Image (cartoon, rainbow, N blue to C red; front, side, top):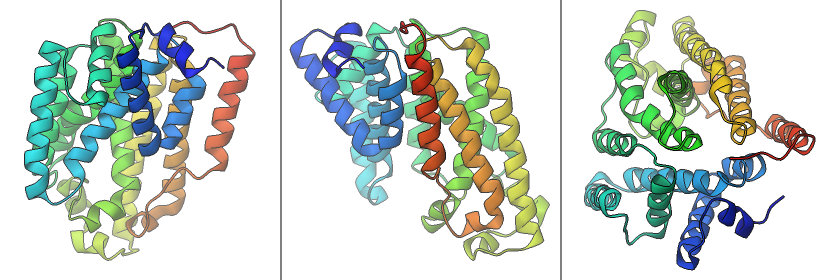
Amino acid sequence: MPSWDRRLTAAGVRDRALRADYSTAARVFARRILAHYAAVRLLVAPALHPHVVAAYAFLARTDDLADQGPLHERLPRWRAWAEQVTVGLESGRADDPVLRAFLHTVAARRLPHHWVHTYLKATTEELHFTGHATEADLQRYVDNLALPALMLIEDLQYEGGGDEVFRSRCRSFAEGLQRLDFLTDLTDDLAEGRLYLPQEDLDRSGVTRADLEQGQDTPAVRELVALTCRRTRKSLTDSRALLDSTVPGFRPLQRALLDLAEHQLARVESTGTSVTRRAVGYGIRVPVAVLLRERRQLKGSAPLDG
């Protein structure tokens, strides 16, 4: 497996200071989402690997600034970050090392700036989130926040961004991941005063917010969870076509992410209404098996290019 230094060279990152910025981004990513960092480290082609790391680190840093602490503390901190990102996209310069690495990745891979701008705008609105009234509201949330966040990673496969077919397949994946997140984080979100499931779904199933907050195990709550699972499974099934649009150097990670999402959904389905009482993770055995499977296939194939 190529060393980190060799991967930086393969990705065209040669300046010493910039290599240090990417190394900082790698540490941020590893501390924040170790499982995803391991997957990227094991499965992404060297020429793409540092760029994917930079995008994940940028998303992690942005998410932390938007989510951590009381709102009155977050707002000025968030506005300063969003301004730094916006100015950085124009100038290519920034004070933060994670942002500097990401800006270099944006330039090197010609990542469309509109994904960043849309993501920042939606995250600003998310600070004041009160809930989705309808399914249409949820779909707008996917278009404005979930999809742009995903495209900051997915579009790195193609200099200048992928085509419309690629984007539509990413859209299915973004919706599947977002619906899955609504389920797996339901307990934590409720504890923080947030509910992302559309209110019209609760009304249709005859469920109140109090039913979810109290962890009720009723036929109505079971139907609400089952409805959300069915919609999630459809989106994840539709997103399988994304593998046909994925470049070889990214395909092992793409396949692993799809498999792990479906595995986590199966855990939710088997858990049922318990998702209102505890978060649902990936477990250990299946994720390790998926990563080892993809790694074995890589070792048995020709070296990947970017």
